[in-house]
Image 1 (cartoon, rainbow, N blue to C red):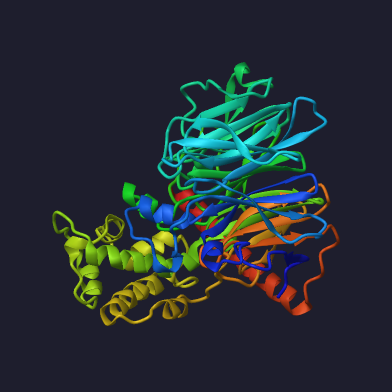
Image 2: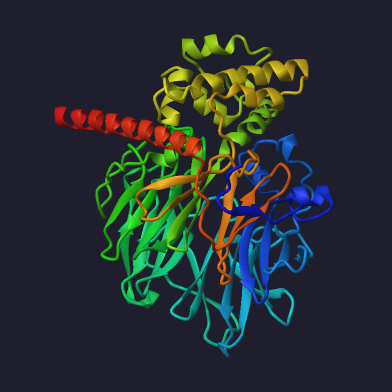
Length: 549
């Protein structure tokens, strides 16, 4: 297995020797260092929150799920100790979603701040720890969680968001100068959405906002928020499906922004998109931006801040199931990008849909076109009145199911026949449900060209990218790179999201990357050539269509 110098440093997935508890530590949600230790805050049963939010039953693959008390584990960076449990919240807190190191007033000592959630989900609970004192509650802020904290010109900023639901009012807080509490930062009415990422760059504070009609990025006019704000990127950089700005990091004098979308969610607003690979946007010091990873838009917009370009690299690095660019990190003269690939979620998600269909009810039957009716005739005992709203949105369309799925993945069917595979999966799911057969083993055989597990890519210049891993470091159930943390000891740490067996932590030392074997290099270049050829074909088709208009 090629890992480019990364090695796994969690002997047990999810840290704990209790497998039932370890599986519930499914996300390495937060990561930071303090003194001699690396600290990792876990997310607890995170996919369950998504299924609950959609009104779907939690798949059996993600059970047990009865303990939502978040944990923080730590490890001596020199490897002198095993992982040890440093803290567990006394009540339901769902997870530590972000963690940051910040100096105390004396500037000679530093403290950790970590964001969890109150038991009722209404507050972001900020915990604090120093080298000499353990974790304690420091503040409770409006909003259910925090996706982003940042140190900007000697001040600590915290943005909060709802735990599961979408919000349209951004919430930003600043630690007061005496470091005794947080104060709300007033933002102008023009700034809307949830603040999901922040960065201090060029003596300005940048905030990325998640919005249904496409993400925005704003920055301060001057050094402080009171100086005013300027819009830098808007309307999803030309594609409304780019609804979430997950991460920002700086590399070679520019910001690199990773986008994302929620699978199936556009269907609920009538947009025929099931899944779309993420885009990556480069923002320069002069506020101009360009797409460095991204193809033709799935839902075109007209940004006021610039014009969308067609990048040389397709969205999601060519994989439409890479829906999040979850992490971007500069390290030792290179930049890394890690994805969330939701392929491995398809089998349990289909199982969940089945349970919703069998147990659910609806008020009225909907009318379907003839192709969909024909496709559904082979599904035994299906009650059209009991379909889940997500499936109704998918099926109740003017075009056939297969065509809609082709549009949804955004790639030619002759290259990636996921549409037929998904329809077949749907049929097999109901057949398996009818006969009470074990289905998950069969699911993974149904999807052609399956490369389950997160992608990790690396670039030395931000333009040419090469894969470090395309299959979650050999574990397809590692479906996301949830953390990339560059330590002062010269190492790069990677934390995974794995709801099947618990998260993992990997470590890369500061040495040079091993060279790829010749055969693998040849295959990589062959695939790269094929992808570039496809991009040029798409670009030519796009230009011809534009000329006709």
